[in-house]
Length: 114
Image (cartoon, rainbow, N blue to C red; front, side):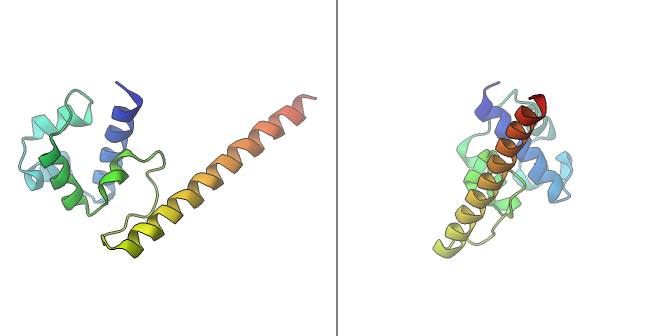
């Protein structure tokens, strides 16, 4: 499984669970079989663009959020330009904070070894 696929699978499960949806309920809302959804969530299948669109609609997210490195970001429901800009800035802020934390840990470990 590629990194891209792994991100998709992890984010799909995360966002589905965050909505409180079981695989069976989610598959009903998507008009797909529970077995197919299970195969998607296990990385064995990849959904068609139509199914991806239904996933985005049911989860009330922007499409790119299924492929984020940091899925715990707030999820906007609006598709207007302002919401997209706010989401992008929020994403960059969280990414920057994570990178700073990782850098600090790396340097702290280096200093503790000296």
